[in-house]
Amino acid sequence: MFSKKLSKSVASAAVVLAAVTAALGPVPASAASAPLSGQRVAVHFDLAKGQTPENVALGPCGDVYATFAKGRQIAEISPRGAVRILATLPEPADGGVHTPALGFPLTAGIVRAHDGTLYFLYATGTPDLTGVWRLRPGGQPRRIAALPSGGLPNGMALDQHGRMLYVADSVLGTVWSVPTTGGAPVAWSTAPELAPAGFLGANGLKIHNGAVWVTNLDRGTVLRIPVRADGRAGVVQTRATGLAGIDDFAFTGKGDRLLAALDVANQVALVQPDGSHSIVLTAEDGLQNPTSVALRGDTVYVLSAAWYGQDPNLVLAHLNH
Image (cartoon, rainbow, N blue to C red; front, side):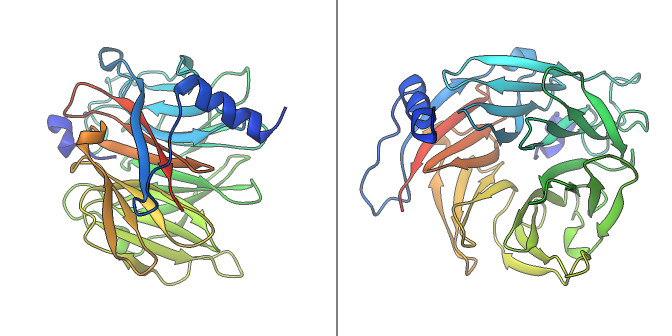
C-alpha cells in the first residue's frame, strides 16, 4: 500500500474461465513480443463509498475477493463485475487517526483458504482491533490474532499446508508468522532489509519456491527469505532493485518471474529472475495507483486504489507466454 501519507492522512475450470471471459468480456491475445495484451478496465469501484481496493485473493469459480482499504470492508466481485460487501469492520473509537503512517484505519492483505475462509489484515493504531481477522463463509468477521498497534500489517500469504499465515508489517519492518488457528504472533524475520526508509518498508508478501518473498516500498526492492528446514527465516537475498513505490506482486508461473504493482508511478512491471524489469502496464491502460496483482491462468488482475485519482478499478490483461 502506498499513499504518500494519503495526502498525509489515506462444471470445470474451462467453464469457469469461459464464464469470466463471457461476462467481463474477452481478453484477447496479441503479438508474442508483448508480455501483456488486451488490457482493459473491467470493473469500476465507488470512490465515494471508500471502495479503494488494497489487496486481492481469487476464488475457484471466477470470483475475486478484495479489501477496500478506506471502506473497512471485504468485498466479493463476481465474474460479471457485481460487487457484494461481505463484511464491514468496526471503526476504532478514535476514528483511526492514530493508525501509524496513515491516520486512517487500513484494511489490507487478504488470502483465501481452500474451504472458502478468508483471512485479512486490519490496522487501526488501537490494540483492540489491529491484527489478523477471519471470515468464514456465511459467518461474521472475527479477530484471531492481535498484532502490535504501533505497526501497519499490510501484505499476507498462506503457506502451502494452510496452517500458517505470514504477515508483512510496513512500519515495524517485520514479517510475522501467525497460525490460522489464531494466537500470539511470532516475529519470523526482523532483517534490516525489511525496514522502512522514511515511510513504509515491507509491503507485499508471497510464499514461493521454499521462500517468503517480500517487497520494500521505500527501498524499491524485491526480497527473498528462504524458509529453513526448521521453519526459521534464512538470510535475506535482494532479488531486484530500482522498483520505486513497489506494492503487491504475483509470480507468473513456477519460476521466479513476477508482475509487480508500482503504486505512485501508475505502472505494472514485469520483473525477470535476474532482477531486470520492464514496464508492461501504465496509466494509459487505466491504472490509478495500482496496489495488487493476481493471476488466474493467463488472465492478469490488477487492482487500483486511486489514492490520487477518481477511478478505483480492476484492470484485466492477458499474459502472453
